Image (cartoon, rainbow, N blue to C red; front, side, top):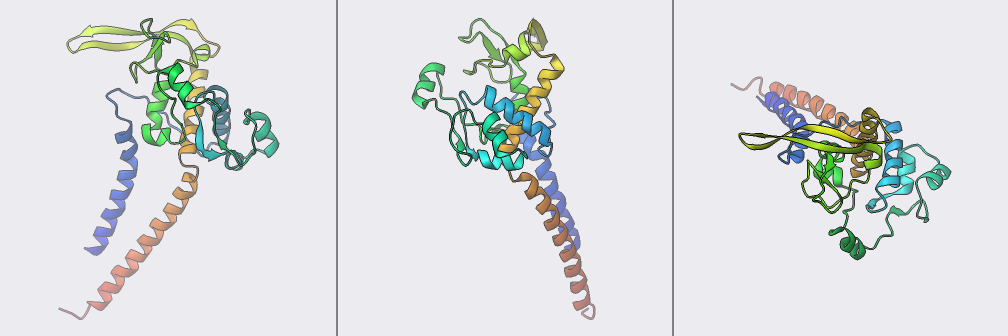
Length: 246
């Protein structure tokens, strides 16, 4: 019985860790699977490049230090300074931006959030779907809306890469039903190239949400193995102690 309870506990922990991201991502919209891989160093390097070039004008990552980034992404300090640090400072500084929060709120209607933990709070599937779901909407101040987050204040900053697309809706029994996107203006990237660009960016955002997650997972495997072996010894000891007791 004790051994069975130990096995059931392991199954519960593993199952919970697998389904938790799905709970976090649900927002009433069918999300595309990002299939991120934070062990892919090349993808993280490209994602860091995408982040500092297209996101850091408005969004900070104040819980991440540049030197930790360089260590995990396997880049030298010179590469770090020349390619990822465009605001000056030192390698031990955090990824802050110069835009004052009050000005940002006045310009955009809301202060752009810090993105250090956005992948943990929203989920990678949400971010991947969000960045691919901007569509033309002339009623919006920026000229774009988003299928995943309606009436979002954020402009489509990647439109030159993706191009401009129109959302196609069809009237059904339960109101307008989304049928797909229709490309209106081509971007500088193909559909596949843009999807890879977004995937690398989301992969990087997932990494900065918990830079130690790879080490944590590796340690977790050893902890579970230890507990399993300890549980088997404990069960064998219990059987030996109670052998002569009827």
